[in-house]
Length: 99
Image (tube, rainbow, N blue to C red):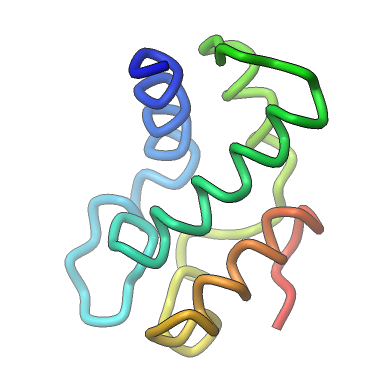
């Protein structure tokens, strides 16, 4: 399972590199709320696809069509706390920014 998480979060980083590398205040993709939302999303999608392991190709394909941009990962769209985590999770499920 460790390899699956590595593949998944490498795909997240590759998909949203600018947001991942940002250390601006409020950018949350690589912080706790981002991590928790992505983990919830991964668990749900693995369950839907009946997977026990994640491949690089699956993780990349899963994220490629999500219409969230690097600059969307802000405290305006995803505030601190569980509300931001929930908003990101819902956005990932919808495949677009939902605010």
